[in-house]
Image (tube, rainbow, N blue to C red; front, side, top):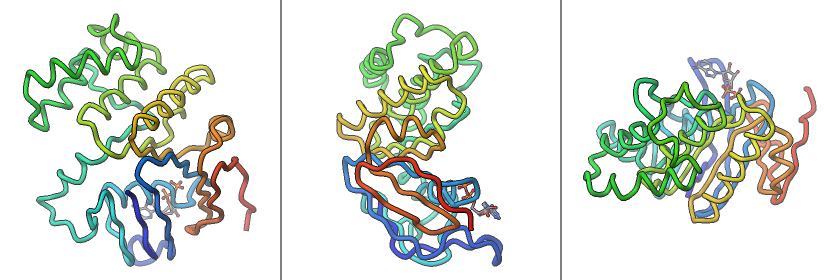
Length: 230
Ligand code: ADP
């Protein structure tokens, strides 16, 4: 589903962010990507979404050769990937229902489809009764649940969460991780970039640890560990 083959990324001809990195995340898998600041985690997500191109190596997402993709086809790639960020990134002038509807409108979903899907998503995140609230009327955890619903609105096969609990208290973090787990159980491939030791250790899922642009370890049912400072 997500495949990196000998991927190297050098920014501006001088900063090596990733060096000869290979991994394969299977369809339906749940994987954490962890590592210290500057290790190359964001570069991994930016290469998957083609915000950046690899300097060397191959990247495949849902069978798409990302680096070879023509610019005009990039929106097609992005429809295969739902993304959630640390800072939620909801539209503040729209209600939570409208935020989810809008994500579907921009990819051309029919009004009928939108009407059918949005209530289901609101139920999934437990916020049906707050459908007409604006983001700033919700707690951080609730906003992140809306961001998750929005990311899933167009049923992408892959969900990437970049520090999804970075701004949340432990209880809200646990709720978000529970939701991510449920989403994975329903069949979506989930990749979570995080610093959050608690959530990594609570789930016992695959843990890919990156350090200084290399894969330091890749463990099934892994735990959070510090990488040695070199
Ligand atoms: P992480 O997400 O693990 O903190 P990044 O992938 O953001 O790490 O960064 C890896 C390395 O690449 C760091 O040395 C960082 O300074 C560098 N880097 C990241 N983005 C850029 C960029 N756009 N231009 C130049 N260097 C960058």
